[in-house]
Amino acid sequence: MKEERLFLLSEVSFGYDLKKPTLYVPHLEIQSNQLIFVVGVSGIGKSTFLEGLGLMNDTILSGGCWYSNGTITDLNAIWKSEDKVISKFREDNYSFIFQDTNLMPNFSVGENMGMGMMMNGQSLIEVKPKLLEWMEKADLPLSIFDRHISEISGGQRQRLAFIRGVCQNFEVLFGDEPTGNLDKITTFKVMSLLKELLVKSNKTGIIVSHDLELALSLGDVILPILPSEPALLSQENQWTRNNNDWYTKNEKVVDPITKITQILSHI
Image (cartoon, helix red, strand yellow):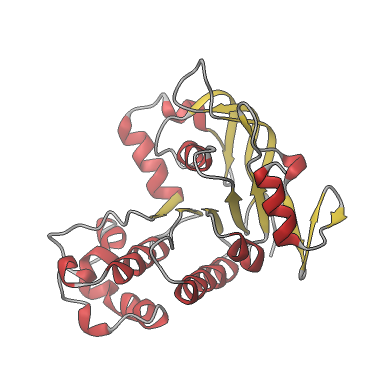
């Protein structure tokens, strides 16, 4: 699986107030074809970072941020474009899974899962076999396919949002606590399905999560956001997996769960 530079960030400040940025990224290169976890304490800027890269909110206050998928795109320039240009770029390159499922209450389970594919011209009948296959993988009863969203549980809704995200065409899948409403066993199962999909399709996943054990179990790269003013995310502090071992700053990490917990807490 060939890895190529997907995002390049240089001296980027993220936030909602130019006078008080939330997060600073001096230099960061994100490679393709990996499952990347962004971790940090609550409120430190994980979602703000994701919103900027994913063109969900214009949180890039300053600096250079580029996306490369055959051609290089300046994300700052995209934000200055018309809304339809921003939407088209997201549709062509990105997919999203959120803890808040954003499901459509007036549509059926099947219609919600297939929404992205149907917006690209396919009918529900055409996409149904693929959706049923994913429902089986995610341990969802096929009998709920035609039900309304109000008739299913919160955990089932979370898995529907997951299926909707992975079934769309994408180069990068962004997840903001995508399994936040699931138990530990189900979380590991659906995230393992995502990892398998990324490997098979040569795609990239960038996941914000508080689940450090999940990141250490399934991630290829961990990007810790360190407490400071503003918070810091840098290439220098990233963790990379080599087989079953983790490395940072060219050194093998002993007892990774304890070490990363200490780093994030700034102990």
